[in-house]
Image 1: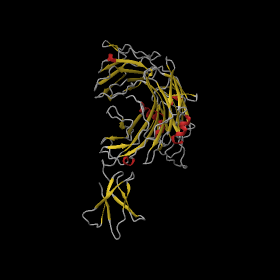
Image 2: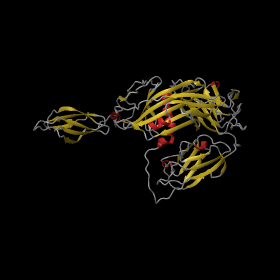
Image 3: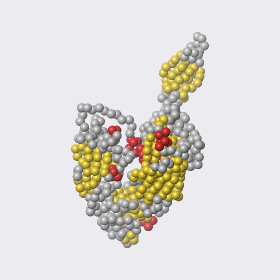
Image 4: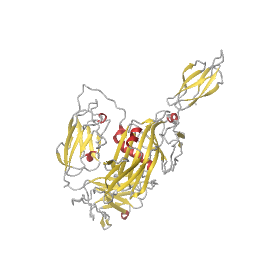
Length: 591
């Protein structure tokens, strides 16, 4: 489903946080008696030549390493990671994985490295945050180490690197565009269907009608997009073959070498139901966005505070080309004061800055006209003015926070918050709840359910059994003022602009689907006026009846009220002073 405006704050936050989201509290160990780790081998070796464009880098260390942080590539002008390459675009397209021995790190290109190129790599480059450094299990940092290798000229011919959907994938959405990725730039032939059945095409299909496919290439010729008109049939096994025997035409590199014959094939199975996609913006469109984002965290009934676990105050702008082109070649942003900044490219064009306070963000990026300019291959320059207002949405606050800390997942639950004051028009109110793996378990609005969330809403009912018992969930509530939205200014691109306030908080569900901890009277205190304070403990958020009696053995006790426990599972009940000479016994009941 193509993100609509309220998704873009989340998307940009994910882009900017990148490696930052993995950082929790850090434990720093002093290990003076231990030695610093050493790199004992690397494959390909330093100075190797003729290396394949998809060959992984394998680093082996002399001792067990701290695997808390994996590979964090350096992003120029944004982040100094623990892994850096030249050219820098190579490093940001690599992923790393630690072996079971905790000594072997395998770094794999997600996109083929350019041919005939020397790649220089550095571990723990100068300026890397100490948290992110490669270090031993004992906490001693690896000294900065570098090496280099060169890729081959491609004389061995092209190869298929990957396909999407992956081979043997199931439940594939019927609107999926099949993508093949190659090791070398390929001839951009689009008439690939051949003349079946007499002559197979360069791409041959089984299980579907081959004539319904249309083909297009990425600008660099390394990706082939195969789109099935009208969507794949449901619950269908689809098989594909590249350059089958007798194919005409054939898939061939721009250097004139054929993809191997009858070697590359695969299959996938489509879903049994049609995917929900009610967005007016097609999945293949590009986008350009400008956002100011303020992030808060609520941990009690008090007002939310800036979320220091991530960049709390962020300005960001992004330009991403349509899936099938034309490619974006350059982009700039002009601020209200006339200063101009070039957007950096990481497969898309992006610029962002983070701040510690709201005042710093507003001072650096005040209200006014911001002009986004970008060029696309074969297209005139796009000039997009956006008028950023001075008003920003209020900070969302959960008003029944204590109840969220003892959520009975087996019962419907009403989540409540402060109103989005001043919300109008295209503004957005959005709630998302995710599990500990980051999977979304509930969101509103959700047009596929359907589930509405009007701008004036201050609560929503979470149905029973939406969440699992005895679990911790992360919830985020977004208020976004939209100042720009367009789907027709640039062909096949949508534009968004917004000022967003988001509040993150945790939801704790009770064990056993609503099992209530028995009440306990933990202590008591006589106040100066003679009244009695009783301290009660039990399940957070639960209400416990309190009774008293003049006799411990009385068959019937008098109910004198209820005490609702706070998020820590404790509460205080106060009873009036007894008459002179009167003795009372007290008890709290488990509901």
